[in-house]
View 1 (cartoon, one colour):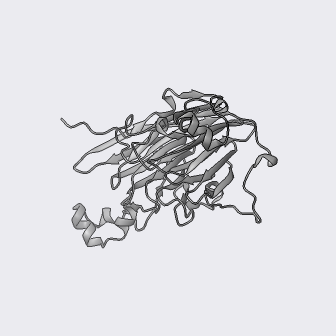
View 2: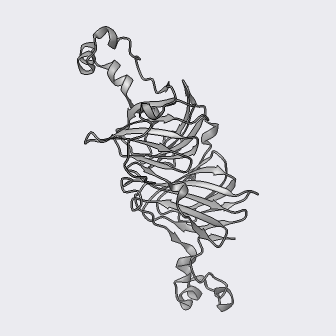
Length: 342
């Protein structure tokens, strides 16, 4: 008997990795078998704490800030260094291999979600600056850094991963100097400030693709808000897998895999869901408060085909013949796209 895949993972119930000022929980295809092409991390940093200087060899990183104020510094292959400040609702994107560091610079702790465009990605196997320097011969590190071998030995040995730093101020490079005020920078996009798509069925959607955020060529992000009882209608994505993080509320999510195969589960705050490319699915708010879901897609462009749009665009005779029913039922079918149905 073939067992259907599980499209739910309780990320925030996972045993965390702890360090000075930081907590992280990650999920890849190793723990979540359905998540073949995307991986995710939920990370917390205390004020001043950093996720140390590092890079990812096999994945780009897309980040979304849930709480607190963050500072990132990133270097690209041309040697250009960018420092940005992020608030709740802001998004960052670092292409694969770009060196970067994350720091919480608010007086409250920070919480953010990371999405990676490789299901086999692991936060436990990144390339860290302390690990790199302490792994090479001492004389090489000394020559490279311009310090004595004795001073090299005083540096942190191994992978620091998290480290506690002082809160920065304007004199310590709080952000890169700019001549003009701007909402968007090379690595930052204010998704939470975007004017949303307001959906009559009871919800809103914000989407950021590479069209709005040019550097984000491999990941599209979206925030969906659905009122109680609302249904993100049956649909599918022809160009991407979908990775979900449930920020608030309770949901039912169902995935259709063809040949009568269907998987349904309940989701709540802190859970992760996954939908393979092309698989039909829906999300319904089954709670009493607004449902908020963060969605990540492994494609820089967003594509979706909604069931109501498809039905509404077909001739009446086609629908009658396809479903084997008369006008009385066909007349009740949707005539155009709905996106969210109350």
